[in-house]
Amino acid sequence: MNHDRFLSIITLCLAGITALAQTNLHEQSPAEQYQWPTEADVLTRLHQWQDLKFGVLLHWGIYSVPGIVESWSICDEKWITRDTTRTYQQYQDWYFGLADEFNPTQFDPSQWASVMQDAGMKYMIFTTKHHDGFCLWDTDETDYSIAHHAFANDPRRDALRHVLDAFRQRQFMIGTYFSKADWHSQYYWWDVYTGHGRNVNYPIDQFPWRWEQFCKFTYRQIEEIMSRYGRVDILWLDAGWVCTENNQDIHMPQIAQMARRHQPGLIIVDRTIRGPYENYQTPEQAIPAEQRAYPWESCITLSDDWGWVPRPRWKSPARVINTLAEIVAKGGNLVLGVGPTAQGLIQPEAVERLQAIGRWMRANGSAIYGTTITPHYHEGHLWFTAAKDASRKYAIYALGDDDTMPTQVTWSVNLPTKRIRLISTGKTLRYKVRDGLVTVTLPKNLPHQPFALEIE
Image (cartoon, rainbow, N blue to C red; front, side, top):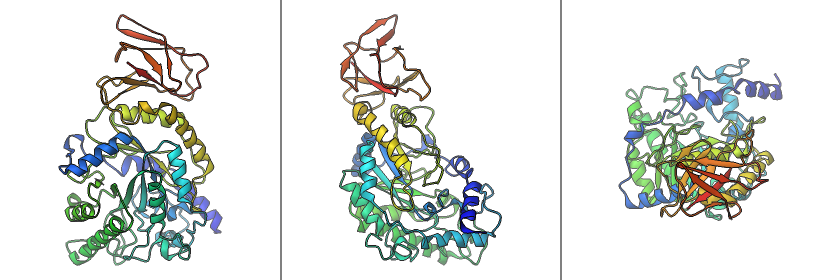
């Protein structure tokens, strides 16, 4: 079978993985078991992060070459759909061999940072290593990295450094994604054994030395990221199945102590693992049904996929804005998943949507950034937020792409006592309060998009 046809089949076979992955991979830790950090500097950083509201999560790696769903296709769990013309070993060899094709000659993290800043994002999280073990930095622990394969002779081969520097120059809060699993490591997936579910594939109790080697390998890789690349604000750990409760004790207390020694005040997000190292929770491709009174972040993609795919189904700018309004009204942050291309750029279709979101954020951001929750946070199309000093509240009207723009808006909570202002223009609007309801008359010819009101 020729290469192009093989990639086409792979893409088609994996088209359904994302929806399954969103529901099967990341069971959320119970809300009532959230533990606030006890370290003062961590709490300070966490509250700063909560004020930012909107960030980007950048998935980029060898899976970007064929445009498939990150590294999940090499996992042999039953929900995975894969091309049937090759054996599992042939497929795995092909997948790991993509390192020799991943040559992002147009790699331009300054473009990434510029696009995300223009979109109104305030923090970033970059995938240093997904579950496949391919490292986006020049690690001493393995040759399976961007610095030792197709991109090895490029002066930008230590990609992590260039990405973080580009975003720091634009004043982003900096986050690094790291998978605790490593499907390329012989200390995690040992070739002596054939089972390749997401978990370690050998009995740890029979080979404790091998597992300890994996723990040391993981510790040293995280220390490289924490000690060599400047200020890092967030360590975002994925692969929640690598945990003590699943008999895969990765020694998180030691990792956390080391990481915070290098990065004082570091926010640690050990996803789905309740306890002291899940400083905020991370519902994936979902929003909690109600407000939550502790730190959380919905991680939701701009298309249907985390990484770049050849035929994405994009969310509209209005849908992203409405999602952000709901999340902020419920007390959370939104980190939007955007996948750069294998060549190293944010593609024009994504840029266009992010620019539209950014225009809205520049005009209406006071209803989002630095706000807090209010007890009455939702009515009809409206999501409500509040200024921290309680001097005003905000109402964001979630207008869908197919909705008709109203001429008036009515609600029964968070009633005004002084005025209502259209934030995007600063115009004070006519309103009346009668029988516990406020009715606001909107200006004619408003753009067909969500809009925000300031209530005093």
